[in-house]
Image (cartoon, rainbow, N blue to C red):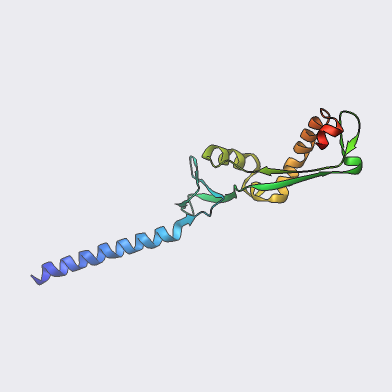
Length: 152
């Protein structure tokens, strides 16, 4: 009876050791994601995006975090840079735009592939990237409105 109880004890100890090793490995490899961020995991054949967390294997996967929260872009046009209205009056204008990445897997992958995760998370890079586009949109709208209409 001693051999059987010894065998059972060794089996339980081995199983317990395996469970502890697996739990240790999973806790070390699990990457948790904060609110307002996305974890992009580049695997060998596909790209996964998670908003909560995932296990990342160091040699097989590359993991990057991207900030997908709302960012504020301010455009100031004053003096010679002012907005020219339809009646050729120059208007000083200050406008604020709010930009964010939609919380969908497809949109996060598109942004990450287009401009990269670091630039998408950096406020200054976002400001430089969108400032010209928003200024051009303001010019287009400004030419359609009189100064009084713009003011009101």
